[in-house]
Length: 463
Image (cartoon, rainbow, N blue to C red; front, side):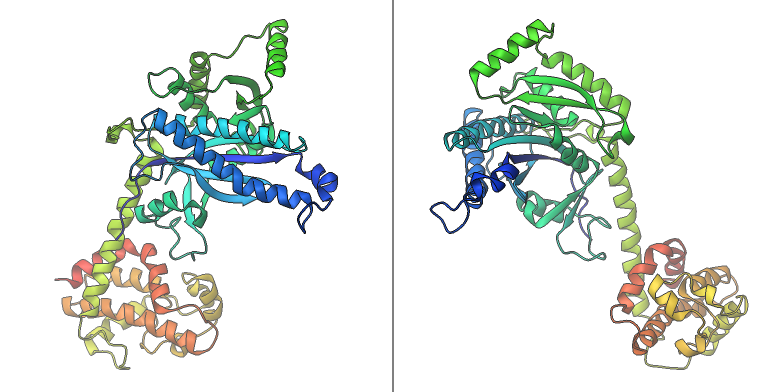
Protein backbone atom coordinates (compact mmCIF):
# COMPACT_ATOMS: atom_id res chain seq x y z
CA UNK A 1 0.00 0.00 0.00
CA UNK A 2 1.32 3.45 -0.90
CA UNK A 3 1.38 6.69 1.05
CA UNK A 4 -1.29 9.37 0.79
CA UNK A 5 0.11 12.27 -1.28
CA UNK A 6 0.97 15.45 0.59
CA UNK A 7 -0.69 18.73 -0.28
CA UNK A 8 1.43 20.81 -2.64
CA UNK A 9 1.16 23.82 -4.94
CA UNK A 10 3.04 23.93 -8.22
CA UNK A 11 3.70 27.04 -10.25
CA UNK A 12 3.57 26.93 -14.04
CA UNK A 13 5.42 29.53 -16.13
CA UNK A 14 4.69 29.84 -19.84
CA UNK A 15 6.97 31.84 -22.14
CA UNK A 16 5.97 32.24 -25.78
CA UNK A 17 7.69 33.80 -28.77
CA UNK A 18 5.76 36.79 -30.11
CA UNK A 19 5.76 37.35 -33.88
CA UNK A 20 7.06 33.88 -34.74
CA UNK A 21 4.37 33.11 -37.33
CA UNK A 22 5.14 36.18 -39.42
CA UNK A 23 8.87 35.64 -38.94
CA UNK A 24 8.68 32.08 -40.29
CA UNK A 25 6.99 33.29 -43.46
CA UNK A 26 9.15 36.41 -43.86
CA UNK A 27 12.82 37.10 -43.25
CA UNK A 28 13.09 34.03 -41.00
CA UNK A 29 12.52 31.76 -43.98
CA UNK A 30 15.88 32.69 -45.45
CA UNK A 31 18.91 30.51 -44.90
CA UNK A 32 21.55 32.01 -42.66
CA UNK A 33 24.89 30.55 -41.66
CA UNK A 34 23.20 27.23 -40.95
CA UNK A 35 21.69 24.64 -43.28
CA UNK A 36 18.33 25.50 -41.72
CA UNK A 37 16.25 28.66 -42.17
CA UNK A 38 16.89 31.43 -39.65
CA UNK A 39 13.62 30.81 -37.78
CA UNK A 40 14.67 27.26 -36.89
CA UNK A 41 17.96 28.53 -35.50
CA UNK A 42 16.18 31.24 -33.48
CA UNK A 43 13.73 28.76 -31.93
CA UNK A 44 16.59 26.39 -31.14
CA UNK A 45 18.40 29.22 -29.37
CA UNK A 46 15.20 30.08 -27.50
CA UNK A 47 14.78 26.50 -26.28
CA UNK A 48 18.37 26.44 -25.03
CA UNK A 49 19.01 29.97 -23.79
CA UNK A 50 15.80 30.98 -22.01
CA UNK A 51 15.87 28.10 -19.47
CA UNK A 52 19.51 28.95 -18.75
CA UNK A 53 18.61 32.60 -18.23
CA UNK A 54 15.72 31.69 -15.92
CA UNK A 55 17.96 29.44 -13.82
CA UNK A 56 20.63 32.16 -13.56
CA UNK A 57 18.18 34.80 -12.34
CA UNK A 58 16.56 32.36 -9.92
CA UNK A 59 19.92 31.52 -8.35
CA UNK A 60 20.59 35.23 -7.85
CA UNK A 61 17.18 35.78 -6.30
CA UNK A 62 17.53 32.79 -3.98
CA UNK A 63 20.99 33.93 -2.85
CA UNK A 64 19.85 37.50 -2.23
CA UNK A 65 16.85 36.28 -0.22
CA UNK A 66 18.96 33.76 1.68
CA UNK A 67 16.49 31.13 0.53
CA UNK A 68 17.19 27.65 1.87
CA UNK A 69 17.01 25.36 -1.17
CA UNK A 70 19.32 22.55 -0.06
CA UNK A 71 17.86 19.15 -0.88
CA UNK A 72 14.87 20.68 -2.72
CA UNK A 73 13.99 20.81 -6.39
CA UNK A 74 13.63 24.55 -5.98
CA UNK A 75 14.17 25.99 -9.46
CA UNK A 76 11.67 25.80 -12.34
CA UNK A 77 12.41 23.05 -14.86
CA UNK A 78 10.93 22.45 -18.30
CA UNK A 79 7.61 20.63 -18.23
CA UNK A 80 6.88 20.66 -21.95
CA UNK A 81 7.50 22.51 -25.21
CA UNK A 82 4.53 23.35 -27.38
CA UNK A 83 5.57 24.89 -30.69
CA UNK A 84 7.13 28.27 -29.89
CA UNK A 85 6.22 27.98 -26.21
CA UNK A 86 8.12 26.61 -23.22
CA UNK A 87 6.25 25.75 -20.02
CA UNK A 88 8.16 25.42 -16.76
CA UNK A 89 6.97 23.76 -13.58
CA UNK A 90 8.12 23.84 -9.97
CA UNK A 91 6.75 22.83 -6.59
CA UNK A 92 6.49 25.90 -4.35
CA UNK A 93 7.94 25.35 -0.88
CA UNK A 94 7.24 28.75 0.71
CA UNK A 95 5.91 32.22 -0.06
CA UNK A 96 9.49 33.58 -0.32
CA UNK A 97 10.29 30.77 -2.73
CA UNK A 98 7.29 31.77 -4.85
CA UNK A 99 8.42 35.41 -4.96
CA UNK A 100 11.94 34.38 -6.02
CA UNK A 101 10.53 32.28 -8.87
CA UNK A 102 8.25 35.03 -10.23
CA UNK A 103 10.94 37.71 -9.82
CA UNK A 104 13.36 35.53 -11.77
CA UNK A 105 10.76 34.94 -14.49
CA UNK A 106 10.13 38.69 -14.88
CA UNK A 107 13.87 39.32 -15.14
CA UNK A 108 14.39 36.47 -17.61
CA UNK A 109 11.60 37.83 -19.85
CA UNK A 110 13.23 41.27 -19.85
CA UNK A 111 16.72 39.88 -20.43
CA UNK A 112 15.78 37.63 -23.33
CA UNK A 113 13.56 40.33 -24.82
CA UNK A 114 16.61 42.60 -25.00
CA UNK A 115 18.60 39.85 -26.71
CA UNK A 116 15.90 39.43 -29.36
CA UNK A 117 15.67 43.19 -29.81
CA UNK A 118 19.43 43.36 -30.42
CA UNK A 119 19.02 40.66 -33.07
CA UNK A 120 16.69 42.82 -35.14
CA UNK A 121 13.49 42.90 -33.08
CA UNK A 122 11.64 40.45 -35.32
CA UNK A 123 10.69 38.42 -32.26
CA UNK A 124 9.77 39.10 -28.65
CA UNK A 125 8.64 37.09 -25.62
CA UNK A 126 5.51 37.14 -23.48
CA UNK A 127 4.62 35.26 -20.31
CA UNK A 128 1.77 33.69 -18.39
CA UNK A 129 1.96 32.22 -14.88
CA UNK A 130 -0.45 30.27 -12.71
CA UNK A 131 -0.67 28.10 -9.60
CA UNK A 132 -2.27 24.66 -9.31
CA UNK A 133 -2.91 22.56 -6.18
CA UNK A 134 -2.23 18.81 -6.09
CA UNK A 135 -3.29 16.04 -5.62
CA UNK A 136 -6.71 17.69 -5.61
CA UNK A 137 -8.47 19.31 -7.39
CA UNK A 138 -5.75 18.78 -10.04
CA UNK A 139 -4.12 15.42 -10.73
CA UNK A 140 -0.71 14.08 -11.78
CA UNK A 141 -0.55 11.40 -14.49
CA UNK A 142 2.67 9.58 -15.46
CA UNK A 143 3.23 9.50 -19.21
CA UNK A 144 2.33 6.14 -20.75
CA UNK A 145 0.72 4.57 -17.66
CA UNK A 146 -2.22 2.25 -18.27
CA UNK A 147 -5.54 2.64 -16.48
CA UNK A 148 -4.78 0.08 -13.79
CA UNK A 149 -1.74 1.96 -12.49
CA UNK A 150 -2.86 5.50 -13.18
CA UNK A 151 -2.62 7.76 -10.14
CA UNK A 152 -5.91 9.29 -11.22
CA UNK A 153 -7.39 6.01 -9.90
CA UNK A 154 -5.22 5.69 -6.77
CA UNK A 155 -2.64 8.46 -6.24
CA UNK A 156 0.56 7.96 -4.29
CA UNK A 157 3.12 10.29 -2.70
CA UNK A 158 5.93 8.48 -4.52
CA UNK A 159 4.40 9.47 -7.86
CA UNK A 160 3.90 13.09 -6.77
CA UNK A 161 7.47 13.24 -5.52
CA UNK A 162 8.79 12.04 -8.87
CA UNK A 163 6.67 14.65 -10.62
CA UNK A 164 8.28 17.36 -8.47
CA UNK A 165 11.70 16.22 -9.66
CA UNK A 166 11.02 15.31 -13.29
CA UNK A 167 7.83 17.07 -14.42
CA UNK A 168 8.57 16.34 -18.09
CA UNK A 169 7.74 12.67 -17.41
CA UNK A 170 4.23 13.55 -16.27
CA UNK A 171 1.09 15.28 -17.40
CA UNK A 172 -0.92 17.56 -15.14
CA UNK A 173 -4.68 17.78 -15.55
CA UNK A 174 -7.37 19.85 -13.89
CA UNK A 175 -9.30 23.09 -13.93
CA UNK A 176 -6.31 25.18 -12.80
CA UNK A 177 -4.24 23.87 -15.71
CA UNK A 178 -7.05 24.60 -18.18
CA UNK A 179 -7.44 28.11 -16.79
CA UNK A 180 -3.71 28.81 -17.12
CA UNK A 181 -3.69 27.89 -20.79
CA UNK A 182 -6.78 30.01 -21.43
CA UNK A 183 -5.12 33.06 -19.81
CA UNK A 184 -2.29 32.99 -22.34
CA UNK A 185 -4.31 34.83 -24.97
CA UNK A 186 -4.36 37.98 -22.77
CA UNK A 187 -0.58 38.15 -22.34
CA UNK A 188 1.71 40.34 -24.42
CA UNK A 189 5.33 41.47 -24.46
CA UNK A 190 4.51 44.22 -21.95
CA UNK A 191 2.05 42.24 -19.79
CA UNK A 192 2.70 39.08 -17.78
CA UNK A 193 -0.73 37.56 -16.99
CA UNK A 194 -1.35 35.86 -13.62
CA UNK A 195 -4.03 33.48 -12.40
CA UNK A 196 -6.11 34.79 -9.49
CA UNK A 197 -4.51 32.28 -7.08
CA UNK A 198 -1.02 33.45 -8.03
CA UNK A 199 -1.96 37.14 -8.03
CA UNK A 200 -3.52 36.80 -4.57
CA UNK A 201 -0.41 35.05 -3.20
CA UNK A 202 1.88 37.72 -4.66
CA UNK A 203 -0.30 40.49 -3.19
CA UNK A 204 0.09 38.84 0.20
CA UNK A 205 3.84 38.70 -0.33
CA UNK A 206 3.98 42.36 -1.39
CA UNK A 207 2.32 43.35 1.90
CA UNK A 208 4.53 41.10 4.06
CA UNK A 209 8.02 41.51 5.48
CA UNK A 210 9.40 38.63 3.44
CA UNK A 211 11.19 38.52 0.10
CA UNK A 212 10.59 41.71 -1.90
CA UNK A 213 8.37 41.32 -4.97
CA UNK A 214 9.62 43.49 -7.85
CA UNK A 215 6.47 43.36 -9.99
CA UNK A 216 4.02 46.22 -10.59
CA UNK A 217 0.38 45.09 -10.64
CA UNK A 218 -2.25 46.17 -13.14
CA UNK A 219 -5.87 45.13 -13.59
CA UNK A 220 -7.53 44.86 -17.00
CA UNK A 221 -11.06 44.03 -15.87
CA UNK A 222 -12.80 40.69 -16.28
CA UNK A 223 -13.00 38.54 -19.39
CA UNK A 224 -14.77 35.32 -20.27
CA UNK A 225 -12.51 32.26 -20.48
CA UNK A 226 -13.93 29.28 -22.37
CA UNK A 227 -14.71 26.45 -19.98
CA UNK A 228 -13.69 28.42 -16.87
CA UNK A 229 -16.15 29.43 -14.10
CA UNK A 230 -19.06 28.24 -16.24
CA UNK A 231 -18.64 31.25 -18.53
CA UNK A 232 -18.61 33.89 -15.79
CA UNK A 233 -15.98 36.59 -16.36
CA UNK A 234 -12.52 36.04 -14.91
CA UNK A 235 -10.23 38.81 -13.53
CA UNK A 236 -7.25 39.62 -15.75
CA UNK A 237 -4.42 40.59 -13.42
CA UNK A 238 -1.10 41.49 -15.05
CA UNK A 239 2.45 42.48 -14.17
CA UNK A 240 4.08 45.30 -16.11
CA UNK A 241 6.91 43.88 -18.25
CA UNK A 242 7.40 46.91 -20.51
CA UNK A 243 11.17 47.21 -21.07
CA UNK A 244 11.38 50.67 -22.68
CA UNK A 245 11.49 53.51 -20.15
CA UNK A 246 10.03 56.09 -22.56
CA UNK A 247 7.07 53.84 -23.39
CA UNK A 248 6.46 53.18 -19.70
CA UNK A 249 6.49 56.96 -19.12
CA UNK A 250 3.93 57.47 -21.90
CA UNK A 251 1.63 54.82 -20.44
CA UNK A 252 1.87 56.41 -17.00
CA UNK A 253 0.93 59.81 -18.40
CA UNK A 254 -1.97 58.26 -20.30
CA UNK A 255 -3.30 56.65 -17.11
CA UNK A 256 -3.18 60.08 -15.43
CA UNK A 257 -5.17 61.67 -18.24
CA UNK A 258 -7.75 58.91 -18.03
CA UNK A 259 -8.06 59.33 -14.28
CA UNK A 260 -6.62 55.90 -13.53
CA UNK A 261 -4.30 55.41 -10.58
CA UNK A 262 -1.77 52.57 -10.17
CA UNK A 263 -3.19 49.36 -8.69
CA UNK A 264 -2.08 48.92 -5.09
CA UNK A 265 -1.45 45.40 -3.84
CA UNK A 266 -3.59 45.83 -0.73
CA UNK A 267 -6.69 46.81 -2.73
CA UNK A 268 -6.13 44.11 -5.36
CA UNK A 269 -5.72 41.53 -2.59
CA UNK A 270 -9.05 42.50 -0.99
CA UNK A 271 -10.85 42.26 -4.34
CA UNK A 272 -9.33 38.89 -5.21
CA UNK A 273 -10.10 37.47 -1.77
CA UNK A 274 -13.79 38.30 -2.12
CA UNK A 275 -13.88 37.14 -5.73
CA UNK A 276 -12.30 33.77 -4.89
CA UNK A 277 -14.65 33.29 -1.94
CA UNK A 278 -17.65 34.01 -4.16
CA UNK A 279 -16.50 31.59 -6.88
CA UNK A 280 -15.29 28.86 -4.53
CA UNK A 281 -11.64 29.20 -5.60
CA UNK A 282 -9.28 28.04 -2.86
CA UNK A 283 -6.19 30.15 -2.15
CA UNK A 284 -2.85 28.36 -2.21
CA UNK A 285 -1.32 27.41 1.15
CA UNK A 286 2.41 27.87 1.69
CA UNK A 287 4.91 27.11 4.42
CA UNK A 288 7.10 29.77 5.97
CA UNK A 289 10.56 28.58 6.93
CA UNK A 290 10.41 25.40 9.02
CA UNK A 291 6.68 25.80 9.76
CA UNK A 292 4.53 22.76 9.10
CA UNK A 293 0.98 22.85 7.85
CA UNK A 294 -1.53 22.06 10.55
CA UNK A 295 -4.43 19.80 9.70
CA UNK A 296 -6.99 22.61 9.94
CA UNK A 297 -4.93 24.71 7.52
CA UNK A 298 -5.40 22.46 4.53
CA UNK A 299 -7.83 23.49 1.79
CA UNK A 300 -11.20 21.74 1.91
CA UNK A 301 -10.59 19.96 -1.40
CA UNK A 302 -7.45 18.32 0.03
CA UNK A 303 -9.13 17.31 3.29
CA UNK A 304 -11.92 15.61 1.31
CA UNK A 305 -9.38 13.92 -0.94
CA UNK A 306 -7.36 12.62 2.01
CA UNK A 307 -10.45 11.16 3.69
CA UNK A 308 -11.44 9.38 0.47
CA UNK A 309 -7.87 8.12 -0.02
CA UNK A 310 -7.67 6.52 3.43
CA UNK A 311 -11.14 4.97 3.10
CA UNK A 312 -10.22 3.44 -0.26
CA UNK A 313 -6.85 2.26 1.09
CA UNK A 314 -8.62 0.46 3.95
CA UNK A 315 -10.91 -1.37 1.50
CA UNK A 316 -7.97 -2.41 -0.65
CA UNK A 317 -6.06 -3.65 2.38
CA UNK A 318 -9.00 -5.78 3.54
CA UNK A 319 -9.38 -7.16 0.04
CA UNK A 320 -5.70 -8.09 -0.17
CA UNK A 321 -5.84 -9.76 3.24
CA UNK A 322 -8.97 -11.64 2.19
CA UNK A 323 -7.35 -12.92 -1.00
CA UNK A 324 -4.39 -14.14 1.00
CA UNK A 325 -6.62 -16.01 3.44
CA UNK A 326 -8.71 -17.50 0.65
CA UNK A 327 -5.56 -18.77 -1.05
CA UNK A 328 -4.73 -20.73 2.11
CA UNK A 329 -8.06 -22.60 2.07
CA UNK A 330 -7.26 -26.23 1.01
CA UNK A 331 -10.45 -26.72 -1.02
CA UNK A 332 -9.91 -23.63 -3.19
CA UNK A 333 -8.06 -25.39 -6.02
CA UNK A 334 -8.33 -24.61 -9.71
CA UNK A 335 -7.23 -28.05 -10.93
CA UNK A 336 -10.31 -30.00 -9.91
CA UNK A 337 -13.68 -30.34 -11.58
CA UNK A 338 -15.58 -31.72 -8.60
CA UNK A 339 -17.12 -29.57 -5.90
CA UNK A 340 -17.42 -30.83 -2.29
CA UNK A 341 -21.03 -31.90 -1.60
CA UNK A 342 -21.70 -29.36 1.15
CA UNK A 343 -20.29 -26.52 -0.98
CA UNK A 344 -22.23 -27.71 -4.01
CA UNK A 345 -25.46 -27.70 -1.96
CA UNK A 346 -24.91 -24.04 -1.08
CA UNK A 347 -24.14 -23.15 -4.69
CA UNK A 348 -27.18 -25.01 -5.98
CA UNK A 349 -29.46 -23.29 -3.47
CA UNK A 350 -28.07 -19.88 -4.47
CA UNK A 351 -28.41 -20.71 -8.15
CA UNK A 352 -32.00 -21.77 -7.67
CA UNK A 353 -32.83 -18.29 -6.42
CA UNK A 354 -31.68 -16.72 -9.70
CA UNK A 355 -33.63 -15.79 -12.75
CA UNK A 356 -31.80 -18.04 -15.16
CA UNK A 357 -28.93 -17.26 -17.50
CA UNK A 358 -30.34 -14.70 -19.90
CA UNK A 359 -27.97 -12.38 -21.72
CA UNK A 360 -28.87 -9.44 -19.50
CA UNK A 361 -27.46 -11.22 -16.46
CA UNK A 362 -23.94 -10.70 -17.76
CA UNK A 363 -24.30 -6.92 -17.41
CA UNK A 364 -22.19 -6.88 -14.22
CA UNK A 365 -19.13 -7.96 -16.20
CA UNK A 366 -16.74 -5.45 -17.84
CA UNK A 367 -18.18 -4.31 -21.23
CA UNK A 368 -15.89 -6.39 -23.48
CA UNK A 369 -16.40 -9.64 -21.60
CA UNK A 370 -20.11 -9.00 -21.06
CA UNK A 371 -20.66 -8.73 -24.81
CA UNK A 372 -18.82 -11.98 -25.44
CA UNK A 373 -20.71 -13.81 -22.68
CA UNK A 374 -24.15 -12.59 -23.69
CA UNK A 375 -26.32 -15.48 -24.86
CA UNK A 376 -23.96 -18.18 -23.51
CA UNK A 377 -24.95 -20.77 -20.95
CA UNK A 378 -22.88 -21.09 -17.78
CA UNK A 379 -22.20 -24.71 -18.58
CA UNK A 380 -20.30 -23.60 -21.71
CA UNK A 381 -18.12 -21.21 -19.81
CA UNK A 382 -17.53 -22.39 -16.26
CA UNK A 383 -16.45 -25.73 -14.86
CA UNK A 384 -18.13 -24.96 -11.52
CA UNK A 385 -21.52 -26.69 -11.74
CA UNK A 386 -23.94 -23.94 -10.69
CA UNK A 387 -26.44 -21.54 -12.24
CA UNK A 388 -24.77 -18.35 -11.01
CA UNK A 389 -24.75 -15.86 -13.92
CA UNK A 390 -21.83 -13.68 -12.82
CA UNK A 391 -19.57 -13.03 -9.80
CA UNK A 392 -21.49 -9.91 -8.72
CA UNK A 393 -24.77 -11.83 -8.56
CA UNK A 394 -22.92 -14.73 -6.91
CA UNK A 395 -21.75 -12.45 -4.12
CA UNK A 396 -25.22 -10.99 -3.62
CA UNK A 397 -26.91 -14.37 -3.45
CA UNK A 398 -24.20 -15.90 -1.25
CA UNK A 399 -24.63 -13.03 1.19
CA UNK A 400 -28.40 -13.54 1.19
CA UNK A 401 -27.98 -17.24 2.10
CA UNK A 402 -25.17 -16.88 4.63
CA UNK A 403 -27.52 -17.63 7.53
CA UNK A 404 -28.55 -20.99 6.02
CA UNK A 405 -25.08 -22.22 5.11
CA UNK A 406 -22.89 -24.16 7.58
CA UNK A 407 -19.78 -22.21 8.59
CA UNK A 408 -17.29 -24.50 6.87
CA UNK A 409 -19.36 -24.73 3.70
CA UNK A 410 -19.72 -20.97 3.50
CA UNK A 411 -15.99 -20.54 4.01
CA UNK A 412 -15.21 -22.91 1.16
CA UNK A 413 -17.95 -21.38 -0.99
CA UNK A 414 -16.29 -18.02 -0.49
CA UNK A 415 -13.03 -19.45 -1.77
CA UNK A 416 -14.93 -21.11 -4.59
CA UNK A 417 -16.13 -17.65 -5.66
CA UNK A 418 -12.57 -16.77 -6.69
CA UNK A 419 -12.25 -20.11 -8.43
CA UNK A 420 -15.42 -19.25 -10.35
CA UNK A 421 -13.91 -16.00 -11.57
CA UNK A 422 -10.70 -17.70 -12.65
CA UNK A 423 -12.54 -20.49 -14.46
CA UNK A 424 -14.81 -18.11 -16.35
CA UNK A 425 -11.96 -15.85 -17.34
CA UNK A 426 -9.67 -18.71 -18.34
CA UNK A 427 -12.42 -20.19 -20.51
CA UNK A 428 -13.01 -16.81 -22.14
CA UNK A 429 -9.31 -16.38 -22.93
CA UNK A 430 -9.10 -19.95 -24.20
CA UNK A 431 -11.78 -19.18 -26.77
CA UNK A 432 -9.42 -16.63 -28.28
CA UNK A 433 -11.71 -13.67 -27.85
CA UNK A 434 -9.61 -11.75 -25.30
CA UNK A 435 -5.89 -11.08 -25.36
CA UNK A 436 -5.73 -8.67 -22.44
CA UNK A 437 -8.26 -9.81 -19.81
CA UNK A 438 -6.67 -11.91 -17.05
CA UNK A 439 -7.90 -13.27 -13.74
CA UNK A 440 -5.97 -10.60 -11.85
CA UNK A 441 -7.46 -7.75 -13.86
CA UNK A 442 -10.94 -9.23 -13.42
CA UNK A 443 -10.44 -9.39 -9.66
CA UNK A 444 -9.09 -5.84 -9.63
CA UNK A 445 -12.18 -4.69 -11.51
CA UNK A 446 -14.58 -6.54 -9.23
CA UNK A 447 -13.04 -5.59 -5.85
CA UNK A 448 -14.44 -2.05 -5.51
CA UNK A 449 -17.85 -3.18 -6.81
CA UNK A 450 -18.32 -5.84 -4.16
CA UNK A 451 -16.20 -4.49 -1.29
CA UNK A 452 -19.03 -4.23 1.25
CA UNK A 453 -20.30 -7.78 0.73
CA UNK A 454 -16.76 -9.05 0.49
CA UNK A 455 -15.84 -7.55 3.86
CA UNK A 456 -18.51 -9.68 5.49
CA UNK A 457 -17.51 -12.83 3.63
CA UNK A 458 -13.87 -12.50 4.60
CA UNK A 459 -14.83 -12.01 8.23
CA UNK A 460 -16.84 -15.24 8.09
CA UNK A 461 -14.07 -17.08 6.27
CA UNK A 462 -11.57 -16.09 8.93
CA UNK A 463 -13.58 -17.77 11.74
